[in-house]
Image 1 (tube, protein in one colour):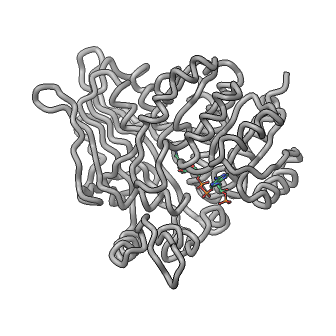
Image 2 (cartoon, rainbow, N blue to C red):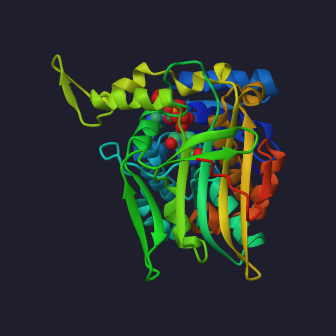
Length: 410
Ligand code: NDP
């Protein structure tokens, strides 16, 4: 039976998803890559043919338009849709999937273009509609969210009776040689990192609450295996919203990402002059959104692959109880940017997002992850996913941390 998939979005991540699906053609036997700019799909299709010998189809689509999506799905009849366009398109693509009875997967939660705020509320609200349509929606199947949620579920299943604290750590020690560029869509990236920080913890009465911080207010120096010590800043990140619901006994969860001083100085300067604004301003009689204009000027993340050198290390640092004894583990994955480029013409950030998207889709098509309704990654059996990560280019490790050993060095 044909497992036809439609991949929407032909940016850095779409490139990796298309490559990896083509490299798993026994499962993904028909692939259509569709995006706003068809020429980008065609370039990816050409690279895939040259490097893997596999052919994929391409199409142009405006994923903001539900009617257009519905007509496209009725014509192409895919078994599932992998959404790697922008978070702005999540709801329209989900609605079209419900209308056509097609499984759905994405890598980032919905965000409204006019409000720099992301949350699962509107996607979770579609759970009933997905159940009624007899389809599955898998939310956040990238690396973080995505693999990090699966790491938490794996820790819960195999290492702990109760997890008390989780620190999600995202370290990119890659260098692309530009004074300033973002590793994924500039608009989404800069909205995320310039926003206020937030983490979750239980108060003395056991009631969970979100604590807000100023942007980049909390910094810790974490010592990353295979990379070394890096300044890591507390950010709000979407996977925490679902993990606080699904991890047993949790008392605190935080998210840290590494940034170099040059990145932070550029960002502060751009912010100070208003270039990170997301409201329209008038310029010589034209309406422009400063952040969108900035995104036009910055290097396309998909073009960074050939220049980026170094490693990423993303993982979860979890503390809790096993057999009434305290236990701490670090589950992590290290990827070398140059290896990603050699395999699929991409830098490591797109690679570590695109491979989990393909794995999530593969498990759904194989029936290993097949439920009705809308799900976050940690709600499904982590073992299949962890096994696939080892096979598909994202091998991981677990370190058992000794009581006197610290990963925070400053
Ligand atoms: P890019 O900006 O490189 O690519 C986005 C693609 O979506 C482009 O091809 C763009 O088309 C297309 N697109 C935008 N709007 C529409 C539309 N209305 N209709 C059809 N296509 C559209 O982004 P990335 O590849 O870097 O990121 C893709 C997604 O992955 C984002 O949602 C991002 O947040 C997510 N992500 C998730 C991570 C994780 O770990 N979970 C990490 C990194 C990214 P065009 O070329 O015409 O602009």
